[in-house]
Image 1 (cartoon, rainbow, N blue to C red):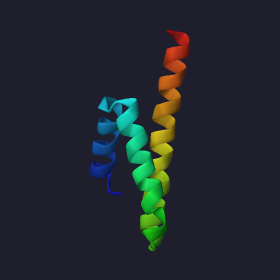
Image 2: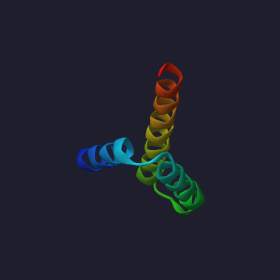
Image 3: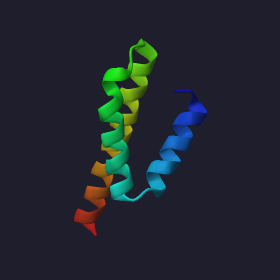
Amino acid sequence: MDKETIKRFIVWLENASDDEIKAQREYILARQALISTREGKADVKLALRLIDEELLARLELKKLG
């Protein structure tokens, strides 16, 4: 992903509901096997990592507040 795409994805993550994020994660996982290029696989890993980080951050915030 280029920097602008990553930025837009992060903004979407910050504003999406938990259900929207989980649905997007499932969508990515379901289509992961269709990706064949090294760059595409790296993009999938990055997207999943960003999703997981956002969900973990939200869990931590709920625990603290």
